[in-house]
Image (cartoon, rainbow, N blue to C red; front, side, top):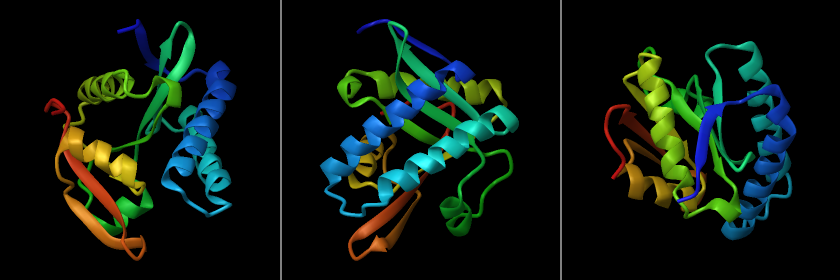
Length: 177
């Protein structure tokens, strides 16, 4: 495996991170065959807001994985989102792991595994014993089911007929499968 580096987001990373979001989401939307023309723009806008929040709110931590100085992955530790809080009795000091993206050219090369394991280590440093993770895209759900096991909750038909949303609650000390 190539040399990967895990570190907190820095202000000078913003443009590179925005490119990663656009590239990853465009690829995901194409693979999922979504026809919502506004989905890409809405999701990128949400992610960019989270990036700005990370510089102003200590409850939002964003991390990047670099390879040869290039950002190839990202993830955030942040307060649980509205979908999670609306459907789960959220426990205090249990964050969400979100904004998890790996550049399409770097997928299936261990970057996601490296990213989630380092985020888990950071949560242990933070004193956080568990986390929530949610997914609405079917390919993301399949990935997380393989890595984390069955979700704690499946919200049937959340996005429309047959389009479910899944939420996991995981220990920070357990290893991925």
